[in-house]
Image 1 (cartoon, rainbow, N blue to C red):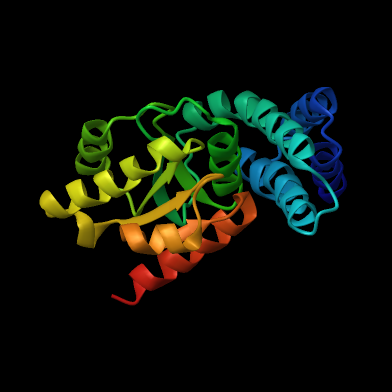
Image 2: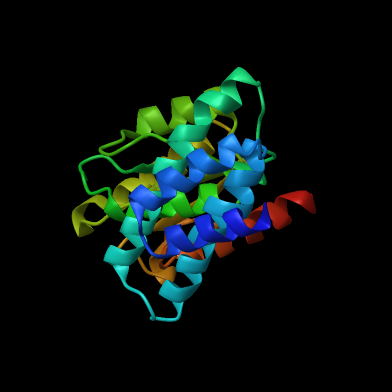
Length: 218
C-alpha cells in the first residue's frame, strides 16, 4: 500500500495528471481507504511541491499544474467518499474569494488548493465577490477564517471595506481575516485591520495554521 501512495505523491510532484488518475484508480481497486489516498498520496505530493516553491526550486506554473493533478485525483475519489458518507477531519473552515471589481483567480485558486491539501475545509466564492456576499456567507457558514485576494491596486480597499462590515455586523471577533495578492503588503494588511497576510500560497497556509492556533487559545 505504501508504495502506491508514494508513487501517487510523486506523480503529483511531477505534475503528471494522467498518471495521478491511473494511480488513484489503482489505489481504489486495492481497497485503500479514500481518505488515506488523499492524505498520504495526493495531499502529500502537493505539500512537497509547496515546499519546493517556497525554496524557489519550482515556479508558479509547476505549482498550478501540480494543483490540477491533485484535483483530478480528488474528483475521482469524491463520489466514493459521498457514497460511504466519509468526511475528512479539518483543521478549520476557510471562506476564500477575490474581492469585488477583481476577476483574477490564479493566486486565489492555488491558495485554496494548498489550504485543502493541508487539512482545511475551503469554500471558494470565486471572483468579483461583493462585500454583501462575503458577509452573508460568513453569517451562513460560520468560518474560522475569511481569506480575501486582490490583484488590482484599485480593488485592495474593498478588503478594508469587508473588515469594517464584519465589525458593523458584530462578526469580527468570530472570524480571523487573511489577505493577499500582488499589491498587498504586510503593512497594508495591518493598516486595514487584517489578522494575517499571505505573501504566497505556502505562507498563506502557514498563517492559516497560526490563526487556528490563536483561536484555540481563546
